[in-house]
Length: 630
Image (tube, rainbow, N blue to C red; front, side, top):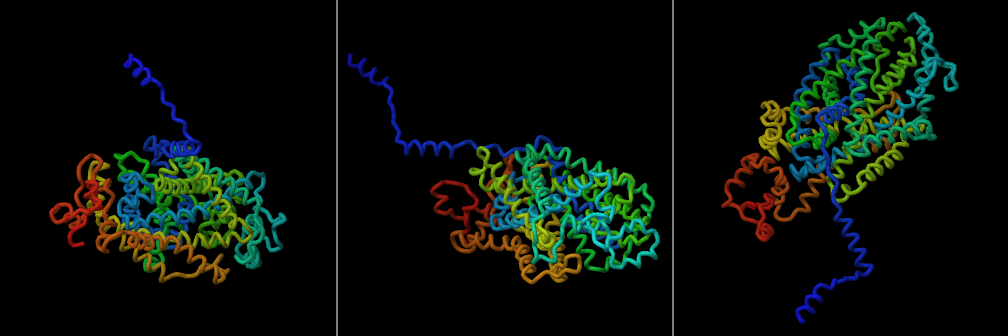
């Protein structure tokens, strides 16, 4: 009987009544323990290749390379270009892509895994990306404005009969003899007046910001909305968008090329584009232009290649992919030159002026020279739509991949915060909203001056070259070039040729460092349109923008050293030892030490002691191995 009662009592359910405070804690704990969303992978190699292609093949291929080629000796410019291509472009491209794939991390955390002391490289790249995103999207806003203006029977920049035209406006295409040009020394074209008086409504200077250009602001908003929708689900959405956005510009480029070479005067334009002038090679600026063009067009030192590579499968052959993409990029630039200069040759033929007077670079080519060219063609609105649609798709790829790069870096840095629920999407939305409001300063009447300031200083070639030096030094000398070769071999199944090793060790840091110093020596203050001189405070702001990325590397290293514990040499060692995941191959084999110092630590355990923390935890964390010399 007693046993029965005991059994019945044991079967009675115990009910625990929690207080409201305890229930709140329990709910909070449940939310904190929420399962992290998967980081994600590319569905196939095509998505990765198209995403990279969309990133690196952008506006610089169309509006910068052809101009630099003609300006710096035509075909002779290909000599310094190919030298930078082989010694800096390909090595850094492979480095960044392989680093992302081997660490499966974005532009910030990949460097903390490789060498915590140089984690500032990641912060420097992300600062450049943030600033680049702020002003690059403004080009898309201008492109939208021109694209919408092209949906008309007569292009608004073809005639001088509009409200924004002045008395100095002259329709030059109606002039057929060069002798008549002397009569209009102070004249302007309807194309220039549409750009300055209608699109920009340019003020007197950066001191006079003027009113907000609401039509441009709406175009800017549209550009940000499209970019956000392309990245709303990370690579799941952007990986699908690139099937169209990365391929359709090639269709447009081929169409424009075929149309351009069939125009009268096209042959003269192409000759002007490629005619070699060997004497130009003696000018240092030619080499500087070749180096900066490689960095701009290859999206180097921005963390983009690292972020996109991090979504690859571990055994993807990133080495072959990188080589092929580098040749694709440079080949696109070269072919684009034929399309652009055949049309500029046509302009020269129609207006009876030298090609040097119609050849321009940057926004001047996209929004002045080419719009003027299409006014001389039959069905000009159609060709205008084709051109600006190509420019839009070339730019929008680079823009939304830039957003994806930053979001990937931050999410990888704080995975427990952002990889839950819709937090990643909300963070991306917050960044887009803040960037839109920050970019409104560039769509005011004085916005062009702000845009040029950002373009000249914030994401200049000097900043990229500085980061490139530290990237190559960190991998080659601190992490160890042989160890990095081991990482690549583990991923692709074989070791690349020795050229990359010598490039990372010698050529890349030496050439990038020399070019960086040359850029500082030959520095000249920014002038808008070669005439407007900025006030001193604007130049000071420009240098602050440039230094905002450069100082990240020494400041983060200094912060790491001051917050680490132990003697100075011990701190140095702890901060140059890679993450334990990087010390072992994923296929199970131990990796060889990168250099003799690491060999001493790993092969002579009898000469090492373990820290108290390591003894207590019985761990094998290599970061806790301290030699007796410390």
